[in-house]
Image (cartoon, each protein chain N blue to C red):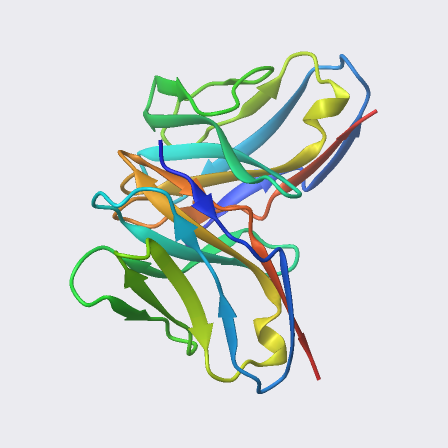
Length: 111
Length: 114
């Protein structure tokens, strides 16, 4: 069975600093990978996804993630964060017809 | 506006008192699912439904029931709630199963069982 590991439960960072949220998954077989974001008091919403093709995928608000098959990783990065990026971020991996979610990383951006 | 609506947002109840959390979507999605979110455990799937009258267990189904009599509604039923069911619950829907087409989530229901 697939599993997802998000090693960092919390990541504090100052505004305009770069950030990386780490995600590793368990299997090297073909998978689809996702990052979902949960803003305070809201449900999760899709941030970006890797299905196939280019290993670097981008979101509309400046986040990017790179699929690394050899490292079984799908780390999320942003070169310069904003206060509004404060949220919880969940990495997810496909398993047959459902998603397996990681435990989440709380990104706290300070002014 | 396309949305998944859960009610209530907050619920406090006592052990053993049956309750229902409603979920409705207006996107004509066939797939719907319930998750619970607990600190340090992330999201875990409780039940899912691929279509009307088709439901199946997720990873943590014990103590929960669901029904799918209409395409838009997917209520979560706790027949005899216990304190270990205190959690944040999310309903989600998708035009796929969330693998190719994304999951659309409701805003959550925070349940406390005393």
